[in-house]
Length: 509
Image 1 (cartoon, rainbow, N blue to C red):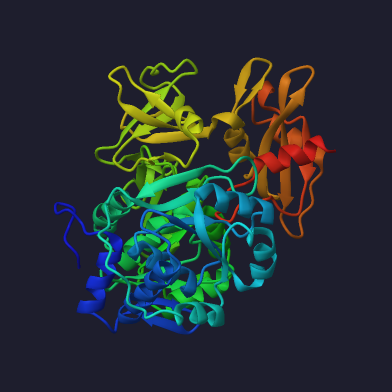
Image 2: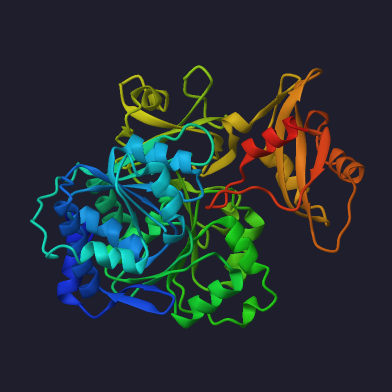
């Protein structure tokens, strides 16, 4: 295992090389029956670095990656890092125009895409930069065109490691720049602390282009363990694979946990090898946490934070079963505060927008200094914080309870209405499987809450019944003005409900 957090950690590419030297035959990556050892991963990283150098792509420049989870995606990502080249990670679910826009914004000199999307994306972006397929044949042809031995690059820890785009499907995308030092510091501090070692087996079931996944994937590989990459998420296939590989660690989002725990035969799987399971990115109900703690071996840890960094809270759920309604306490050395609409800190016990400072803050939004300034808040001493846009409140023990995204809060008749409060109540209805509450314009109240409802299979409910049921349990200002039934809620690849799409759909009638 690599040195603990009291020692300055190496950068991630060097960590991989060390494992290739010390444990060359250990599996680094596994997917669909294919295994890449540390020796092979190290060799492939060198080949990628050499190929990039042959294309005259220089250290501190950028390539773009746009694809689903695959070993080829991972080796190109890590190979670029070895060449000192940053990777701009783009969601393949974005439109071709959005993909081209983000790749161009990042300054990428090359884009690598899934084989199934190569023709379409190449036609859109081919005049801007070369486009290479991540398919086995195309990758081998590209890498085979060089000697496979790159010129050594002395990487500055402050160089960009990755650029992650915060809104690649809707809205103006913002490229969040994170450095080698931030990523390696995360590995040393968080990875070792959560038991990642050369004996770990980590399940990767969320997209590699998401910071949610990198929080788990980077320590899994950089600390010498095995990462098992899965394809399109299927709950039964996931637990089958986890049992087969005797998984020790996992990162899942709440909707994935919900589907797994709903499996009729869940309790028949041997998951006793699990040490820690993680969750982040979306609201995680106390009831679901309790169910996981009761039935799934190993600990449960929830992270609260942003890709932009700032402050992180951690809930070690198995150690604090009475705090499952919270997202935990601030990480050591993370300064998290609450501010009001005027930028003033609120009094203890009051609600406010969450802002945070830590050593894990983004450098800024790539090429968007004005957007970067909008995301910053400075205290009276000039200390820099990142604004989250979330509203929360600390309890007496320093545990943070989230209310809602500030932009999702509904102001109805002058009163603040928090959609999460209504959603937490509605999900208790016997016929409701999933729910999202959003605010829409109202002539009488300014805004008014409406509910989008997914009904459980075999159950029935009318809009009037649900509105009456909720009205008996909440205040007058919290009553739903309308209920819309839908087969499913629109979600991002990491499980966040896309409330903007719901509001737009309602407005369109």
